[in-house]
Length: 104
Image (cartoon, rainbow, N blue to C red):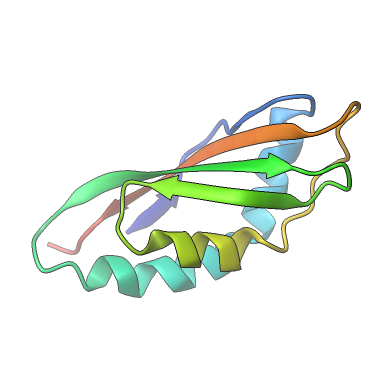
């Protein structure tokens, strides 16, 4: 199973608004990450930590992820369409986590 953990950390906009926006695009992330996790050869569990910038227009960009090899492409494709409220001043940063566990 793959689960988005609650409480994204975000600067300059509401955490609740950020979580709602991420959940709207969650199905794309889940469908991309599920086969990646299923392809792991050993029983495993972990956390994918994602960092992104929020542009002046409320778009996520400059994605970085760690915790699961190959997740970078899925994360970018899935959350690239996420739109957040425009930050009050300049750019903002967003960090959130996705937990995964291989089938038993």
